[in-house]
Length: 124
Image (cartoon, rainbow, N blue to C red):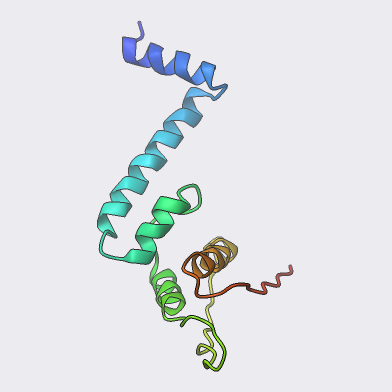
């Protein structure tokens, strides 16, 4: 016999047209995101990622992610007569979020008004 809570979850999942397993995965991901947000509470870029891009950032950051985001945060605001930022070179293994992190960095730089436009070229 199922508990009232599991029956409620099943009804809720059916109303959303989501399987109970998918609903459980979403709940686990949300709990993990909240735990990570607490762990990274002192790091502004990490809080921003968890707040504004929660469907893309729900796992912990590896050292190379931290290095990348620290370089992004050092980018100065653009403007006439200002020198360009120092170049950054990052290598991420397959499946480590190259596109996700770079595209999120573009969004963050524009949201902070450090850049008005960014040219991003990608190919496979």
